[in-house]
Length: 100
Image (cartoon, helix red, strand yellow):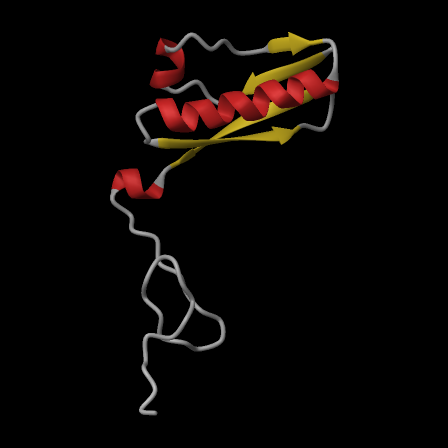
């Protein structure tokens, strides 16, 4: 038997139709359920948390819960290890235009 566990039950989870500690006969079914539920929770819930599915050390999968930085007012910033001056969220290309 394989179990899918929630790391922490947030308010949205408690109000939802999802349940904690769901068991499956096969590893594949547990994996499919964990990844699908994590994706659905990311789409359906309030957005304060991000959910992701991970394989545990035993016969279980864990759906982890993390604070969504944008939901609490933290704007992500991409930093570049090679010294470019990009400040946008989607590119590491330099903002400096060539004089050519």
